Amino acid sequence: MNNKPQNINNLFSEIKQLIEEAKQNVAVVVNATTTVLYWNIGERINSEILDNKRAEYGKEVVKSLSRNLTEEYGKGWSEKQLRHCLRIAETFPDKEIVYALSRQLSWTHFRTIMYLKDEIRREFYLEMAKLENWNTRTLDEKIDSMLFERTAISKKPDELIKHELKELREENKLSPDLVFRDPYFLNFLGLEDRYSEKTLENAILRELEKFILELGQGFTFVERQKRMLIDGDSFKLDLLFYHRKLKRLIAIDLKLDKFKAQYKGQMELYLRYLEKHETEKGEETPIGMILCAEGSKEQIQLLQLEKSGIRIAEYLMELPSKELLQKKLHKVIELERKRLKTKKLEE
Image 1 (tube, rainbow, N blue to C red):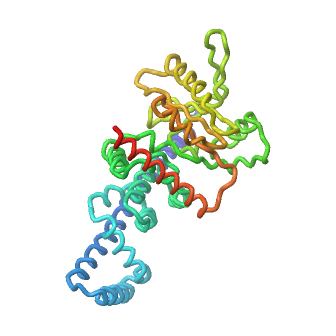
Image 2: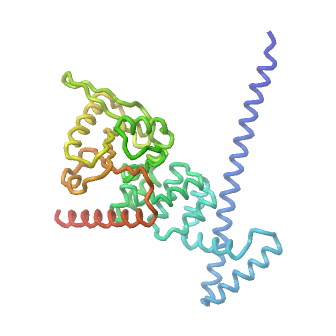
Image 3: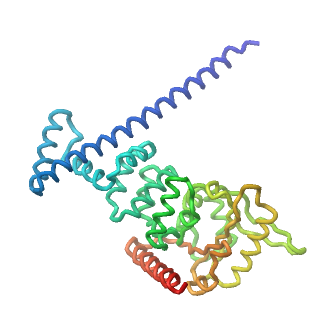
C-alpha cells in the first residue's frame, strides 16, 4: 500500500502550522514595537513641551512634526495621530506596563481605552480585554454596554477595586466580583412579551454561544435541568455551568418574576448538594446565581446572600437607551457604595 499521499498531507499540515505560528509571532512583535514606538514619541514630545511651558508652543511642535514626518514617511503621521501618541504617554506613564500589555493588546485597544475618563475604568477594561482575549469590536461593545458599571466589583470602594485588579494582573487571581454582572442583557433571545421559564431556558440553550458571551469568557455549559435526589424528593436546577478561572461550578436558576426571599433557601439546597456530590478535588465551593426579571433590593441586602455564595441579577429582554442605563447604574453604584461605607463605620 502506498502511504506517500498521506505522508505528504501530514507534512503539509505540520509546515502550515509552523508558518501560521511564525506569522502570529511576527504580528505580536510588530504590534508591540508599534505601540511602544508611539509611546516613545508621545513621551519625547511631552518632555519637549513641558520644558518650554507654553501651550502655544505645544501646538506648534505637533503641527511642525506632523508636516515633517509626513514628508519623510508618508501617511500615518497626522496631527491627530501625534496627539494619540501624546495621550498614551500621558495616560500610561509606565513604559514597562505598556510593553507587557502590548504583547496581548493592539494599538487600537490602547487607543480606545486611553480616552476613558477615569483610571479604574481604564484598568478594568485593559485587564478584562487581556483576560478574555477581546478583539477591538468586542471591546467597543463591552464599553458601550457599560460592562464595568454592570459588574459587581464597580459597587465596591475604589481601593478594593484597585486591589482586586492588581491581584488579577500580578497573580492571575480572578475575583467572582469581576465575573458576575447585573443586569444581564438577553435581548438576543428574541422572546415575545409573554413566555414561561421553560421557554426562557430553551431560548438560552438555543443561543448558548451568545448567552455565554454575555456571561463572560470562562463559562462552560455542563447540564440543563440538573436532577438532584434529596430525601426521596427530586429537585431540578435550571442550568449548571463551570467557570474555568474561578475553578467552581456555577448554578443558575431562572425566575420570571421579582426576587422573593424563599428563592434563597432553594438555591442554598442546590449549592450544598453540588458541594457534597459534584465538586471535584481542587475546586472551589459552587456559586449560585438567580436570574430574575426584577430584583428586590432591601430583601437582598437583609438576606446577606453573598455569605451563602448566592448572586442575584436582573435580566433585560430589551436594551434600554444608553442614557437611561447610565443613570440607573450610576445610582445603584452610588447607593451600594454608601451602604458599604455605613456598614464599615458601624463595625
